[in-house]
Image 1 (cartoon, helix red, strand yellow):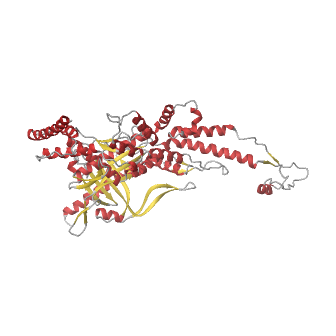
Image 2 (tube, rainbow, N blue to C red; image 1 turned 180 degrees about the horizontal axis):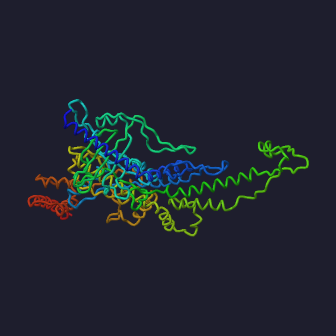
Length: 610
């Protein structure tokens, strides 16, 4: 081994040691937050007689008498289930806004929207959001990792050794907060973090397949698990190694950032950040964060479970004490004079009906103590705590509180009450929208970076058919991702239908003759869920598409002839709009104007004949 090789190995060993030491530091700094997540997951799973001790570890609660009941009446789990069900209905649709009225920008925006639609379907973004929402509801924070998978997609060739070469595609992963370690816990923005570590357990064979480096593999503890009877343990994976990915944002020393990947004691990768996925064509972290409730001045957010734990403890205590009181009344308490009866026999059988009780002559017979009834305070406190669950979580059911709105008879008034009842979920809804927009932008930027060759995508056209369209990454000129207008938390299917019917009654979908065009009627039927009744073709849209083809041909210098079946009014409108929005040379403008005049002449001829 040469001196240079020894120096390289020494530098790699120092880098590995530095990354591992940095990882351990972040683990210690985040330990108290992680214990809070573990406590939340225990309460969510029903293991609720536990707490974090003075040493920062979770232990079971052994306080109280041996005879006291410690049953769990889990209201946190159904509350979280209800919130997840309500948030599941929130699936905003992504679209891309054109940078200008220029036809090229509009076509690029339409293409980008089609790419987003196809990629979201391919990556199952809806399923990823559902899984991520469960994590955010339990721990307060979850992350999406948007990466480029070079080994996915259609096969485009073979290497010299026969291995497949694929075109690659975007891959979306849901990352739990247990795997993310920020540089500082007080910086809320993920983009402003100086560095970020993603640590996860990976099988040794998968590490070798991905990086070509052999690691020994060992027993690795994964996410904390809870079991019954107050026993706390971690899931152990055999033959795994912890892969530590440390991302450093671009700075003066590393203009393109730095990514260092370590597993065991070996260096897997060290280089620039791989993705140009930031604003203004910069490199940044491939992560998008989603909060349940953002926490000011903290990288990690909070969640509803944190706020429900004190209420759940009080509820368990009230229910158990109430049941103990009922047991005392039902089973009774016996007063016995010392030495008057065989207490062992009495303890075993009690005072069962028909029992022959023998007591000492001259002694006092045993008697049942009168314990009265269950105090009403138990019921009042139980109801108050149940209401507090609903108030804190924002999942109160209006049907359970119908007696509070007996004076409201207006449908509009009831709708306002429903909207106010759902408004407390708006914070979580906004976080989902923000995360989805971030995912959409990263998807487009990754395709712009890696889709160097022509690839095919299918999207719906005006005729409601899947039209194949080829594109390259350079065709994606904009990434201004927006949400479509009908993606609203309170826009339930019933309300959407009612809104459409109101718009039809007011004539908003009718033309100047008071009729609804077949194309508009088809779209309305699809929105209402009656796709089987559609089938009309939007002739105006088809003429618009033909006009766009003519514009492109005339711009390139080709000759375009008028057809007998042309809708000249539509052509005049489209050609005029193209002249007003497109940057054209004098020769190109003259060709289009000449063709435009031919359509105008045809219109004049028809009028004169009439």
